[in-house]
Image (cartoon, chains in turn blue, cyan):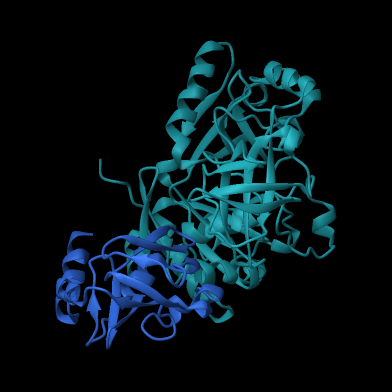
Length: 132
Length: 385
């Protein structure tokens, strides 16, 4: 069963957000990495990029497939994790810790309300599994 | 229509497999992970369920002229108990299917293994040509539904399988086939495969498939034998530059374009497709299958992505992957032959961005071969084992 970590916010496209003041630390969930399999490539937005909630801001690619990474909140990218670009398999090994992807300085923190909490995301995953 | 499953479906589920639909079959794409399964086959051994593949028996007094007419390789060169890689071709020179033709030692039978996607089409093709030549004494039988097929591949495949059979495997050369019991099951053991490693393909009565699978996994467990899905089967065959029908081969691609002219035996007489191929050989094939390695990061070159030189589209990717063995991003592409050449640059357009690549010699991976009696006795050594 995929790990869902308490205290984080989640999107329906399987990104997570950890709020640190006005900064949103963003990654992809354990479920996402396990669905994709061995991650081989990441494309992250450059520092300074303005991203909008729900819009594609990068690409994550495994041997199996490529998918978009969607911005869970709007704002400015203030940091991108170069270590994970260099070593994409970090996403498989440590999706919630070492493999954070970007930090976004939020321009509309109220958007966080539209994201799921851990409990809602667990329920969402259970429903997704039931369909699949 | 609900996809078909093999007798091993419940086993795959219990092993935690993820499934994909592959030409009407629900097959495991991976168990533990594509990369770890790939490495297991390169360094130890892997077990594959290939129950989706088709098997057709061709027998009768005129089996040889019939197969000679329908395939470009020379069936007459096969000694009993050996096999060859071959194809069925359209009159245009395009490919109906790529196949392995085994000549069984007993019963004067040819056992033809075909792609799952092409089984129906192949049978129609064979029967149509059979009908046009009433005088030929040939019987065509589709035995796919009663044949189980497993592949045991990797450097430890021989030692694992040897513990379960009295057949002397060291004496079974690449592309040889023998009828033998494996753990009490009547099996055809062929030293063939689709991974670039040494190994075997095993054919058994379909009702014995689960038992054979279980016994093999149990026997090889201590040596690190793992089940392998279609995901790693694809990355393994790409490293070995083995063509996949629908990617490197198809109705619009000739064996000459795909770099498989060695399959065509010009000296053997007439066969379907010969005239077109001879003309193309004369003129030079317009396209050429090439191998490439990305020289910058940019993602995986996937099937159909455009290939450019100086901003001009010159072809398309047929297959690409991140190579676990080479730790490089590799691929094959069918390009305008004027741009083909080892060391020459090209660019693969990935998500609208041209990503730099350089052409390299195929295959990307070739296993280190021990020189031995069986190697020197092998048929041709064409890299399709």
